[in-house]
Length: 397
Image: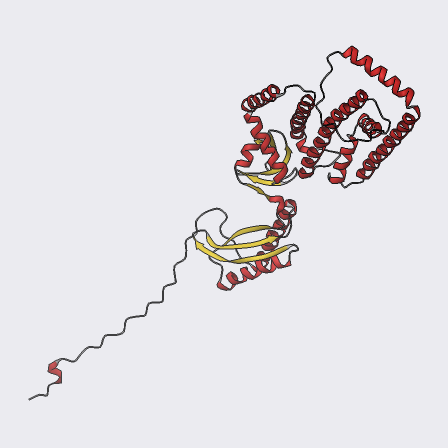
């Protein structure tokens, strides 16, 4: 009866002691098998070719469907990459393993096909898992398929670490299946990993910080941030450092670990920005004009597009003048538009004050004396009435 079992063998494959003798035995068994089962072998080969063709068609279909993706890397693109990493020889081994039982292959040939299938599946699974892991990292980073962007160097070291780990595990599994004692190899890899980690702990610290940026996404390339009294735009996120183009023009290079050690204010996430204007008027401003100034500032903000008044009022009176404070929101995340709206409001306030004749405080910085309350006019003293003498009021004898 033909052997129809297609599952992996449960025994441990042991390398032959006499390779020449085993090779001759395999050749003799194969020739005898070919002579006795020619028709069955032809059917098995045809079936294997059909299986390979079907698997190649599925691979091409997956790649074609996954090319239809958005600008950002999605799961369809990741699946396409996984399909593209499927080796043709692995498909051939899969087909041979599927038809092996039908062709009633000799025991030694059956063991050889099973061993090749096990080795191929182990390393092919490592390739699939690597593409899935790297695709997931790029998906979380929000990177494009055409340009791997600012995290290309970080993804390079991540690719190396993931590949080294996965293929080391695959090699250990294959050697263990061959009957090799891998205890010493595993211990050596562990000690070597610890030594490398201790020697490069600073690099790994920044690398893990880069991974935190990838997965948490506190900011991206092109975002405006404020960090440690520095305001600027993210230009590049690398393996060890992040480049920030400050608003004053210089390039600030910050370690990823130091960058995440302090608060980062992402200004790109704002849908509005609050403006606070302080305006000082002269003390000679009349009471009516002091009230009119508040109404004029309120009207200017209400009439300006994309601006919303928060509050306005006379906040203080000191030696510098009458201190007003105007607060309003600009409903935009674009900082250039915010600056333009702020300038528009200030120019309109300046024009309206000049038209109303409202004077600003002395711009020379000379403190203004707070005028004292006007003194009331002094009244002339009342005339003193002379009291009559006692002798005047007495009657004459």
